Length: 378
Ligand code: SF4
Image 1 (tube, rainbow, N blue to C red):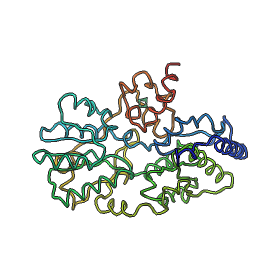
Image 2 (tube, rainbow, N blue to C red):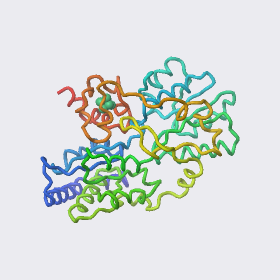
Image 3 (cartoon, rainbow, N blue to C red):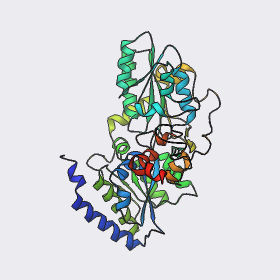
Image 4 (cartoon, rainbow, N blue to C red):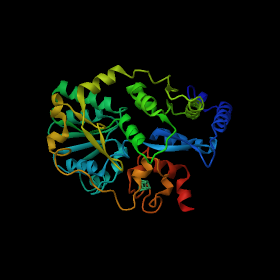
């Protein structure tokens, strides 16, 4: 496949793996004392397992899986609020498929749909807009989810609804940002991270400068990476090279896609439609300052929280995770999914306890899909 096979070339991969091994040994990294490299993005976690990169890299390099799966970090309280909105008889609730099976305290959207709620899977907020145009007698709500990658498309759909005066369209906004949880992880005294693989798709929108604080304030290297095996291997080598040379910088391995200053059209739409919430709850991580977005006052008519009286400001927030669930520890990289007592026992893709097991970018789903089921059985 043109433009993909070049990044899967086994001869080139062997050469990069050898360079990684030489550099890791030069730093003194061993199986007993490995370097901890966190891949922030759930898409990278899946690519690492799909291509077996965790087994191929030198034993002195350990991948730590980060919190970059937006469905996984969606707290139970927000799923409950989504169910509350979806239960209203006038509402058509639209969502990406990934969020359908995420459990709240009262079940999932899929279970609510089976019980009769009008919940529909869409591929884009523009699909939800189209449903609103065709059904003027119903309230169409879009479940706005995701990091900076999906934030612009939701913003553009709100701007379009405003232009058309589409009063029966609104967004239940759960958009979140990547840099703030990284800062929270770096401030966590229990974490020991030596460097980061930066997210590719998010960076396509925000550019590389929002990560400057990682190198400047915490002295850690970060390399923004693509999603093919050679992208990831080269990025690991770039992180290791920085450590070996005593540097801490923001580097861009994915320059063929990620512009240094991001996508200006997307950034303008984000600035027009959203503002920061003072804080936002993350599943397993608690409240993180300024890590969530809400819809600005000029677009309040399209804010489902205001329209239906749910969300922040409408009552108590935090909902405890199920007993024995270790999602928070997995999402912060403190333990591997197979170390969760529920993995493969109380929590499977068929009967998930945590969102990490059902999201296409979840670390537990990756372990399960690429051999974890076997590991759990063993
Ligand atoms: S196995 Fe299930 S309960 Fe355990 S961390 Fe993963 S998603 Fe959470």
